[in-house]
Length: 253
Image 1 (cartoon, rainbow, N blue to C red):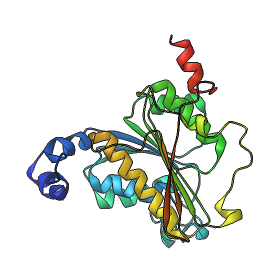
Image 2: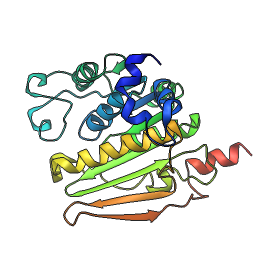
Image 3: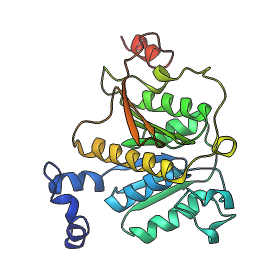
Image 4: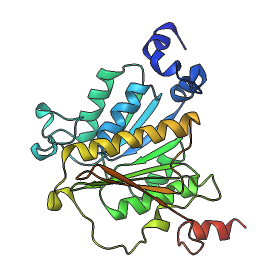
């Protein structure tokens, strides 16, 4: 770590149980962010600012006017541009020393597997069940921690799934593959700061995982009620009959 980095990240380095070793762990880390919308925008921006060494950004969408109310990585001049390129330009302006890779397409299961196997953590900032289940399966196969967030209307959810831990559930322990129709912001609306809060907390949990700081949100689900400004915590147990992580447990025994 050079003198410029020591100064840039000094407010983190001075934290107890973080220190230079924690910052170096971030600099040496690679995080995959799938979805650069309302959740992925703040998550990516905080990780870039904090000094995560490499970010891979995945999204197949383009910036639209209706995105600007909540997707803070994009501005009016970005309308019509791909979200990954728009976000990457903002992140480079924030921190030119980090490495960025962009994937401007909808990735299939095989491509997800190849992306996940080379990273240290995955942030799921998508808005549909099909992609979430595919990300979950890729993280299970590669034994890579998954930080999952969701937000709609005045509500948000946050959970961490870490298959390196025997007691950790996976995303499909919480939501089954036949959970029903997706709820979209386009159809149901969302208050702008709600996605910002959840996305920022996804970044926080990711940093904790990468630096082994504190206790990650494994085996717990946080539910946010913005209308009452209340958080509820629910315990999540691993489902031995889960078709995703249950199969892996059986096949490896």
